[in-house]
Length: 123
Image 1 (cartoon, rainbow, N blue to C red):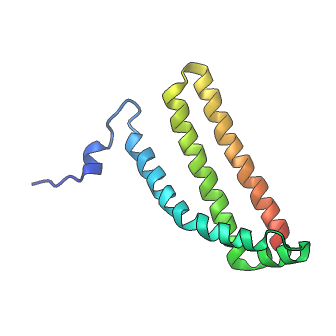
Image 2 (cartoon, helix red, strand yellow):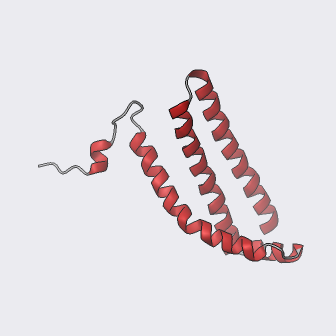
Image 3 (spheres, rainbow, N blue to C red):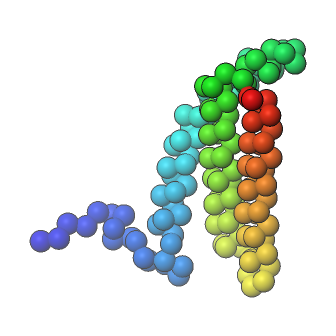
């Protein structure tokens, strides 16, 4: 007797055959962001309003720098996947393909710029 979970029964269903994968990715990244965002807001808030030297000192430490990098990368990937799903639902044809490429490219550019700025501060 085979036992199938609800996820296994749903996998491969739908027009694109990736709906379950997208849903699980968004769910997992949302849970990760639910823990990362409050910690990031606390660290960023404590540095906000400080002098230049204090802000540099805060983000030069490993924990705030790593937490900021994780929040940036996970947040932008979550944004890209969510925007892609929205575009797939509401756009068609060439506009769909171009919009998805722009959104994914924008998210990678923002990740690169953010990590570069963080590296300049941390190192």
